[in-house]
Length: 320
Image (cartoon, rainbow, N blue to C red):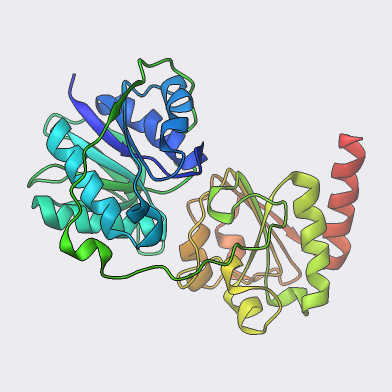
């Protein structure tokens, strides 16, 4: 069976969930070969093998941490030359899409971004995408070169399937461009203890109807009762009620959780573009004519300050 390169997103050896989802999708079209780079790369092998990786190519060099994406592109290109894969899969983070795009240019191949599903086809992998703010679903395949595909987090289940996981050191020759842009400092994001927004299985968001930064405590309380991430609409972010890093929408982050709860959000197309592929959508809004109700699986017409605290209390009671 053909091999499929999977770029590993990890932090000091801790593999992030979207990579494990990529391994599930990769097994549909071939044998997954994982590429782990940077500090802790070798420590990823056990987890990757537990989720189906037949080989794990690792490389560690100062360039991966000291410079931006080009060293990683150099390494992925080296892995491509070694493996000659049927496809290359990368998670649809901002960095992942840049790496994928640069690789596609280098190897003269087409690219598909933000896929939400992947299946084998007679003429190569077929990717499912949501187009025009998720109003349409399309199926696409690359007709020239080796497909390079980025996949949205939460697009596939994480399945533990034993793989050989043979670890091999990847030889990487860095290009002249690799050291062109250096990282001078890093400031770790303050941890809230909540899941990463784009990776969370449940997202609870607040919008204009929250009516103030102090009122987001109601949204956070519901999120914490569910073990969820907190999102915000553009209106809430522009008003300064919540950080831009939590914005869901066309100019924010795209999420595709199992459950999305929108509170006080009207449902403008800008917001829908970032969450419409969620598996189950629930909305709480006091305006029965709000556009969000055209999209939801379940809707509650009511004041979020009455509904959300009751929901949080009920969840906590059942958990207790």
